[in-house]
Amino acid sequence: MPLTHHLINWFNVFPTLPILFFSLAEMNEQLAFREAASNEVKEVTILKQADFPSIYKWVQDRCVSPVRELTFANAEEIADEGLPFLLLFYDQKSAHLKRLFHELVKNHLQEERRTVNFLTADGVVFSHPLSHLNKTPKDLPLICIDSLVHMYKHPLPVDVILSDPAYLKQFVADLHSQKLHREFHYGPDSDQPEIAKLKPTPAASNKQIIHNDEQGLDRRADSEQFNWPNANAIIPATAAEIPCVITCEPQQQN
Image 1 (cartoon, rainbow, N blue to C red):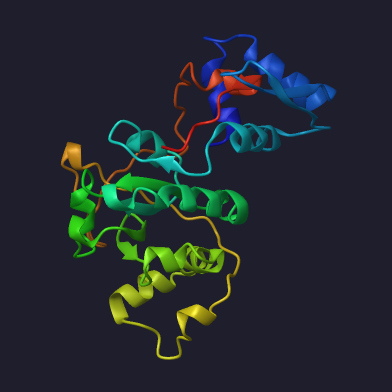
Image 2 (image 1 turned 120 degrees about the horizontal axis):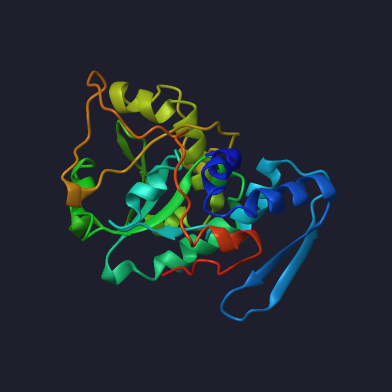
């Protein structure tokens, strides 16, 4: 959601916040990143003639973890961001893969973070989404994409996928090129090369959501109408969002 949409709704609650952003964007003042835990300033940046998207990206890059843990408590909030979910489903025996996944995304998939949300989720807790892949918790771990209409499982084992960022780059590219959707309905392309030889290509934005088991939501077929929250709606800011302007505590990977 554009930052300007937040500012409209924040003004009455935090009347100085729009002034702060105007100062950053128009007067080249400093933007400081301070960790809440240590209270130490880790970085000071001057964004010359920055627009709101630039400031928002700066804040997001420092205050939002590259990989977040999906829970019933935050599923709706993350879905409101309007991006597909690329998920690592794990169980207790494969929980160690979360750190490898986090490091891979952090070091090699920053561009892809603009078009998908990288998430981890306990596949035992979120067992219902696995059924859309004809999988059960016994099949964990696995990596998939939830694109609202369908879920697409990566065909390779997780340890192989995490051995090379090219696998996830290509997986995201195939989502945005509609290749995953096409092959879901019509089977693999006849001229499809071996997956190990695929190279990543640029991806474009798309929207998806993962359904909340706890609320009993289920996936809808292509022909059915379903009203999802408007991605452009003004959503009130929470107190946790405001400190990101000057100080924030980066989310820790569970």
